[in-house]
Image 1 (spheres, rainbow, N blue to C red):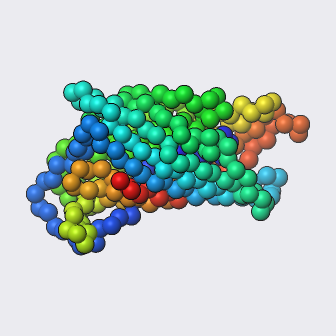
Image 2: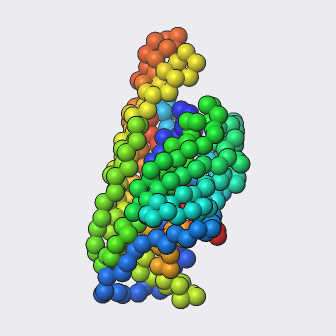
Image 3: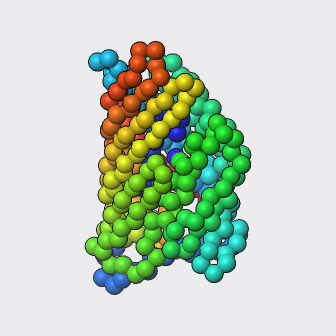
Length: 276
């Protein structure tokens, strides 16, 4: 996006693709997403994360798996403003702790939810609204992260191979700075062309969770490297694979034993695939 004490991920994209044959282009190419009213962009997103915490010199791992199918419908376009309906067609999540599998209700309950998204053609996300219940509200920033990753990273200008551009995503709890580089172009077997973009990003998370009588404050830094592949036909992402490594600490207050500081490490693998 998992937000309730397990998931604090700002996802940037490393994309595996269906592209095979390298193309050399010496002229600049316009990378600009082509939004049209009625267009539906459907993606399958899977995430696998290992959360490692050190508790009283003992290491404890949580293995977290999540899967989403998300439909993004362009409802209307007014000038440079895009109005989009983001529907969660399918969502499921589970966590394994000490060999025991448990569902993640906040993830499962997202299925069928719809988000109203407003963004500009230049990639700026203006607003996102939903009717999520309070116990699922904490995962909303994951959905916002997906929207930013899918629609807010293309430069919307002409670029040459080797050109770079930067993007910043700032929320109350997350700050992400990414540098993108156009590495080249490829064709698939049907001669469809794709742009290949590499990304390096750094992010920081400062999150406070109030759970019953316990307060958890998480301070985590994140470094991500990856490659992006998008279709030159419409400049929307075709497929993705991301690895992100995070480390920091969780500070817990309100436990019977008093305050605790727990070193915390995350390793996250994310795959994104356009299916429509």
